[in-house]
Length: 508
Image (tube, rainbow, N blue to C red; front, top):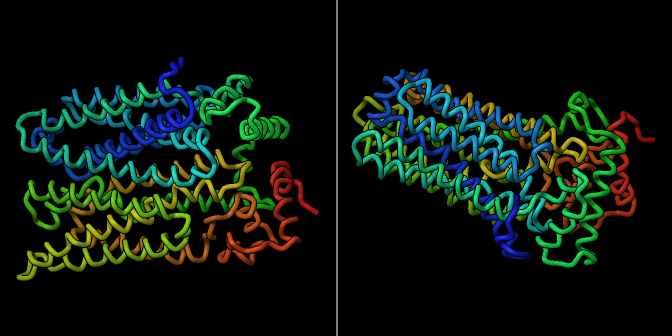
């Protein structure tokens, strides 16, 4: 059911973008809200003051739910469509939030967090796809790279809400912050009532007339406009190709072919692994606990500084939102990994003096490097993986390859969040050495394994992985360079290479 609330053209496109960004604010809020709750005295009474192991499971089971929701999406999303999938996601989140904020036992809290995670997994798998299918191609990269910025907005809102509620007494101090995520969900549900279905989904369901009407409404043009006809025909041609050759099977993902599909799926998996294994969720989920346990600050000051540290995530994310195509993909990952590794190293060094005469001063100084870590991560490693994964994958494996990439994000998110309370309690300053090593290890990995994809067409990216293009892996094709005639012929033949790859046919 759709109501014409937003009209046509710019207003409709703006409503689509606002709905998608609001969904990502909700995503950030869900990630950040528990950081100020795990130390709340009333909440700890409800969950019977768990040890660090159980605390890690209570917090991380949300990420396991996200992983489950992600897998569910890729099996059932094509059946429900984009709009209904967004409604279903919000429904899971509403049920999960209700269970959490009415909890009186550990089991209910954990079930509520798992259910909420399922909704978030469906949401994060559907929303970027919906946005990309209903926006102009020249704005697609900018819109996708801005989504982590709004995750940062949600995290900051959650942190300062937690901080404000820490001055209240009674269970409302933790129940209300959890319940308020329902406001974002209801707002997204309302917006989706006025938004159209994806034209690609409509064409796939045989509703071509509706798809054409959606394109006309989104771009505010007539059905016979060349832009509308071109996009409509491209959708139909792509679907015809899928119907002709059949859907690319999971079993084919890691087979060796002319465009190195298996290698590129592994690169996508690794890129999302780097997004999580550098220690970001130690800061996002547990910074108040870290500042209180490792640094020795008061609970009030830990909550306040935790909120301010999260603002660095937002400010850092502004840079790639506007300049990622100029900066490229490899340089931000290289410098970002180095900066995050140095920050973790300095935190570890300064906290190692704890217990000595210089302990209080050096522990206080370590707080500065939590700021630098979040600022650097927000401007580099936070954004690039979400843009790089769909770019690096070939057309025939993009949907399933993206599923593997996103599942990597949630799986390692779950692992890191589960072990963090234990390692910061038992290893103290040594825990940060683990993340220092992972960040530094990413530098040679990116340098030697990941080619530059910025400002390249998808055909040029494919060419990097053919036998003719391997020698230019790390130099790529300059967007302002003139391509030789022979290279143009090679590039234009890649569509045929991909089609052959589906059937194991070797090119001549």
